[in-house]
Length: 293
Image 1 (cartoon, rainbow, N blue to C red):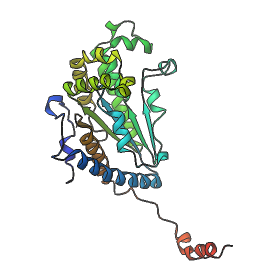
Image 2 (cartoon, helix red, strand yellow; image 1 turned 45 degrees about the vertical axis):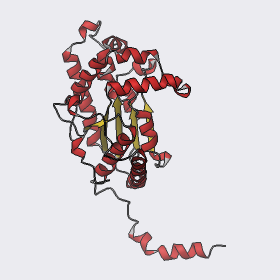
Image 3 (cartoon, one colour; image 1 turned 120 degrees about the vertical axis):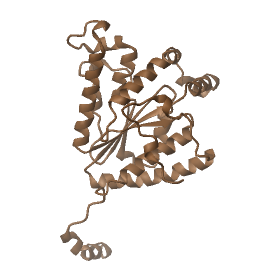
Image 4 (cartoon, rainbow, N blue to C red; image 1 turned 90 degrees about the vertical axis):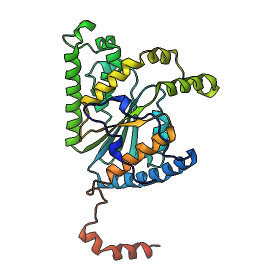
């Protein structure tokens, strides 16, 4: 496949979901897309080894999307060829009592990837301006000074939270974290079909929850919150990409391609050279090993 046009997926300050496609196949069959992904992820896996050896950058991959958007399977397929010690995946569910006793960014901060490693957030710190915005009553569990009822949570509150998230990501970027944020753009009809498959296939039953249907009724509210959150947090140092998610195989190819092509632009990422002293004695070291009994 020709080099992907990354800018086709990059969002801007006036992000509107309707401006971005939900389906893509590049005119290729599932088999061809699977083969394409295999090649890209192999290159990504090799590049991860270089990033680890270089040891100056960490990579944070953020995945957001409506229920059934394919986040879990994307992680499994895109990072399949990574050294398991080089990538860490964290899924953020309902905050625990411990997490609620800290500020809302704490649970995300403590699991950030170390230098030389990839970190993947399956749902992210953006849940704090998405789920909590659709359900503002959840904010009351955070015990924030001055917030006593839902009526205390106004637009100024959310604007401040966007500002805090921007500061958080700017701090990470300035200290060597390369940030990639992917919004998996799923159509409402495709979500309906995927929920029906969960009901039809016994092995998929465990994935279904009646709560999925309740959240589906709030589809428009979520779409609005995604648009505002992405519009207010899209920056060169922490870009958002809107990825068509109705065709999972193409979704994986796009995400993997964006990661690989973007990372290859960092020409300073390369394996460190051995010192002159070690280089000058390579023959001696080889001789010691060859003659060892």
